[in-house]
Image (cartoon, rainbow, N blue to C red; front, side, top):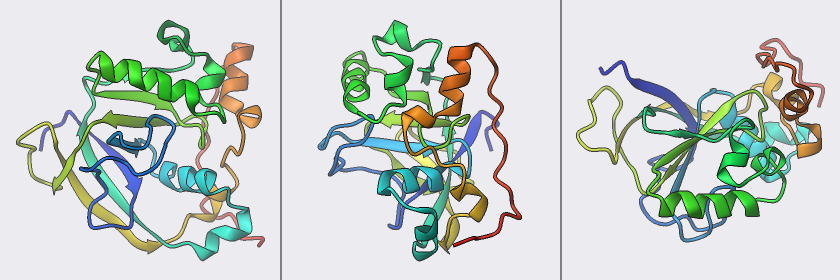
Length: 204
């Protein structure tokens, strides 16, 4: 098993967590019709991303059950687009995690045109964590098998019919104005991500 492969996570209720055909709807880093993969470095990331996308209230979480996947990815060629480097890519730090996806989609168009294949970006849903965005189709391969081609990503189901941990529910950033990592960056202070409380109680 190559040691250079990072473990990432995604929620997908299909037989594969990866897109081969074009995405059917817009995302932060894609327009409908552009094939794009969204993966999270932190295992809580997919739950937070789902909650933010669906505008869920805390007491809504218990009604949703999903399949969580683990994927092994070589991220050595990824371009990092973070708060420090945003301006060099023609985007502001606020726009990078903003509620308007337009600036990110425009940057993604420029990156695709420059043959960039993947980027590491801040999570707008779970501040302090990072996501991987892959431009182009990918296909699943067995988790323990060494990928033969760059389009092959080893994948395995990590959980099925699962719900978001209660502790994650209280950490989702609903709007850019509440993004603690962005605020800390503006203040020039470090931002330390704290893990969701595994013993948090469901007050709903």
